[in-house]
Each structure stands twice: as structure tokens, then as C-alpha cells.
Image (cartoon, rainbow, N blue to C red):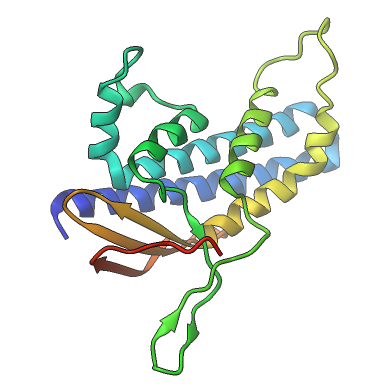
Amino acid sequence: MSDSQESGQNLYRELLHEATFRLIAAKRFHDGFSKSNSAPDLEAAILQVRKALELIAYSAIAPDKKQYKAFRAGAKKQPDFTRDYHAGKIFSALSRINRDFYPLALVPAERQPDGSWHFGRRQDGYLTKKNFENVYDRLGKYLHAHNPWSPNKQIQNLANDLPGIIKKAETLLSLHARFIRTPDFQEVWVFKVDSNGGPPELVRAVSGGSFEINKS
């Protein structure tokens, strides 16, 4: 592994670790809201989830930083990738570089008859890419004080949904594969992320020839 690859992997790990702590904080604030019914507690939970999702989006850049930076430099409007923050826009750019950039949620590996281990794809219970983008935009509506002349934001509905959103984000990260494709190499990282705040663990890194990802 080159120094740049190792640096990208370390940053990926650090960003996921911080995202986990943000989700833990969100659960703590939401628990406070459940007891106090205090709007600031709920808004604090919403903010922490939103930041956690942004950290996951930043982590998605890390393995493909060189290609992402070059791609963004060609933009006519705001070509500086260091000013990027909107998860949906980051995902849109990344999809032009690496169609498999989004974490692939996995289930624990099973031993195969030939002695190898196989990580199956998780079928449900996690934030899909579409879910992620929808939730990210939904949370953004609650980052500012409510304009009293605008329609009701139905914040109680979000309060009810927030624990499930947090759980799906944790499940996405808990065991996932990240696929890297560059002109020079192709690689697969399998990461295990502890929702209780332990450091993310690289379970296995596979590199070599080209690969394809089945849709099911």
C-alpha cells in the first residue's frame, strides 16, 4: 500500500469514528428530549445526525481524494473541493468517479466449503444511498429557527423517526465494504464499526485484479 493509500484509509477510519460519536451524542440528546419534551434537545439531536451524515460523505471522498479533487477542479462554479459539505452534491460528484463509492452493507462472513470466507450483502435495515440523501435533506429543514409565518414543519414526525434513522446509519457502517477504483489500482476495504464508540476495525483489505459487484 502506498503512503497516499494508507493516508486515505486512516482518514476514512477517523471520519467514521467521529461519525459514530456524533450518532451516540444524537441518541443522548434524543433521550433528553423524550424526558423533557424540550425543542432544543431535539434540535441538538437533529444537528448531530446531520453532522454524522456529513462525516460519512467526507469519508466517501477519502479513498478517491485525488480523482475527486481533479474532477471538482474542472467545475465552472466553485471548483475548490475543500469547501464542499453538501452530502448529495458530494455523492453526485463521486458517482462520476467511482460508481461503487457508497458503502456496501454486509452481514458477518460465513465459512465456505472450500475454506474461504464470504461476506453476504445485507438486504434491509440500513441507510441506502437514496435513503441517505432523503434523510440528509429532511434534516436540513430543522437547522434553523422556524419562521412563524411558514407552514408547520411537522417536527414531531421527525422526532418519532429519528431513532430509526440513527439505527439505520449505525447498521450501514457496522460492517461494510468500500470499493476503490483508480487507473493504478483497485481495492476493497471491509470495515467493522462499533456503534458504542470503539475504533473502526479494518477486517480485511483485498487488492488485485478487476472486480464486479452483483446487484443482489
